[in-house]
Amino acid sequence: MCYDIKASLEAQLKRARHYGNEKAIEEIIEKLAPLSDLPLYHVSGFNHPKLFIYPDRSPYEPTLATWGLVPFWVKDKSQLKKLWNNTLNARGETIFEKPSFRNSAKNKRCIIYVDGFYEHHHYAGKTYPFYVSRKDNEPLPLAGLWSEWVDTETGELINTFSIVTTVGNAMMSKIHNNPKAAGPRMPLILPDELADKWLEHIEEDLDKKTIQELIQSYPEDELKAHTVSRLRGKEYPGNIEDITKEVAYAELEF
Image (tube, rainbow, N blue to C red):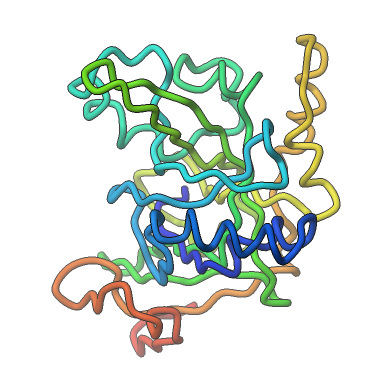
């Protein structure tokens, strides 16, 4: 799955810099950056941070959104709180079927740029966190779904998102070995040359195939991984820059 990420401002701005200009970037930094929770050297989705997403309606300009998709049909904050932690991720194989995601899968897809993500490895009854990133150190474009929800009590419009996941590649099969999970998973990382396709509008059911064909495991030879400090409990150092530094565990065989 994908519940823990690293997201710097620079990584989040990659798409805007590629397609925009310096004036537009300065405006984004001035207006949106102070409202986000960046920089996030480590954050759990269960904290529902605010990040930049690139929605299909404005594919080159980021929008601020909260992690944890809230479908438009959610009635109130009480129902929101019951659902929120269950929509941090969306299984790519069923996004066109699940009630929480099918509307967004058809009409509201987005990309979230992150520096990397964290995953836990299980060994001898303990868990060991790994940090996974690209070998070339470029940001990872993660496929996402987004939604708009209106708080009927306040009238506030809230943008939210979920990260799409897929079957884990060979590397993730070694790392993501949770005995309670059905199998290894990983976030849906879009190859740079195919990222735009994820945001294309689809009109007919047959066009779903275009999106479904993008739901593939990212090549393991383009990724790297190493163990890091604990991300849970008393040993967790918090959201600090050094959190991604390699930490060796003598007892861990990997």
